[in-house]
Length: 482
Image (cartoon, rainbow, N blue to C red; front, top):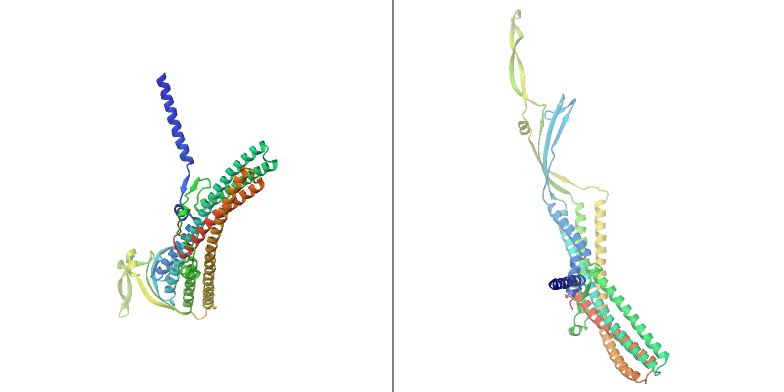
C-alpha cells in the first residue's frame, strides 16, 4: 500500500512537471532581434509579393517581344458535308449529290521590316523590367526603414515603461514616508495628499507608457505579418556600446551618393528612359511593313472519281455505210467508261499546292492615328522627365533635412542629458532635506516631476540620435543595423 502511494505521488509530480513545461512553451515569448524582424518582414510582406508579381509579368512581356521576331506557323484544316447542288471543291464543277470535302493549309510568315518597332519594343520592355526591379528594391528599402523605425520606437517605449515603473516605486516610498510623518504629526494632510497625487501621476505615466509600448509592438508585428496575439519581445542592444554613430555629415556629399543609389530616383530615371524609347516605337507606325509569307495546301473530295479506262458493253453502233449503201452498214463496238474511287492520299498528293510571296503594306492615311501615338509618347516622355526631376528635388530636400535633424538630435540629447543629471542631483538634495523636514511636499513633488520629465526626454533623445543617424545610412545605401 505504501509503495502504491509513493508511485502515485511520483506519477503526479511527473505529470505536473510535464504540464508546466507545455504551458511554459505555449506562452513563451519569442525574442526578435532587429535582423530577424527585417528578415521576417521581407519574407512575408504582401506589398513586396505584389511588386514581384508585376516584375514577373513584365518579364513575360519582354520574352514575348523577343519571340515576336520569330516566324509564326498556323494550320487550318477544314472538313464539311455538302448537300444538293454545289461545287465539287476538287474539280470546281457543279454537282448534285452529297459531298464530303476536306481541305487544309499550313501558313507561315515573318516580318522583315516594321519601322524598327520589334527591336525598339524589346528595348522598351527591358527598361520597364529594370524599372520594376528597382520598384521592388524601393519597396524593400522602405519596409526596412519602417521596421527599423518601429523597432527603435519599441525600444524607446520599453525604456520609458521601465522609467515609469521606477517613478512609481519612488512615489510609493515617498507616500509611505509621508503617511508615517502624518501619523506622528510631522506633516499636514496637504503634504499627504501631494504624495498620493504623485503616486497617481506616476501610475498614469506608466499606463500611457505601457499603451505606447503595446501600440508600437503591434505595429512591428504588422510589418512582420504576425498575428496580433503572438507573444514576442524585442532584443535590446547595448545602447552604450553604440559609440560609432556619426552625426557630422556634409549634405552635398550625402546627396551625391544618395542620387546614385536611391531607388526613388533610379526608378524615375528608368521610367523616363522607357518612355523615351516609347517614342521610337510609336514612330515606327510611319514606316511601311514588309512581310515574307509561305503556304502549303491540299484538298480531298469523295465525289471525285479516277478514270479506269473503258469496257465493251456487248452492243454495237452504226457509224456509217459502205458507198452509201444502207444495206452495208459500218458498225463499231460500244464501250462504257469505268470510274474508280479516287484514293484519299492520292488526292492529297495530286492536289498538293505551294505558294511563297512578299507582302508590303504602305501607310498612306490612317486618320492621324500614327501622329497621335507619337505625340502621346512625347507627352509621356516629358512627364517622365518632370517626375525624375521631382524625385531628385525631393531627395535633396530630404537629405538636407535629415542632416539638420541628426545634428539637432545630437544637441537635444546632450542638452537633455545635462538637464537630467542636474535634476537628479537637485532631487537627491531635496529628497534628503525632505526626509528631515526641511522641504515641503510641494517642492519635493515639483523636483520629482522635473526629474521624471527630464529622464523621459533623455531616453527619447538618445534613441532619436540613433534613428536620425540610421536614416542617413538608409539614404547612403548602407545596411541598417544596431
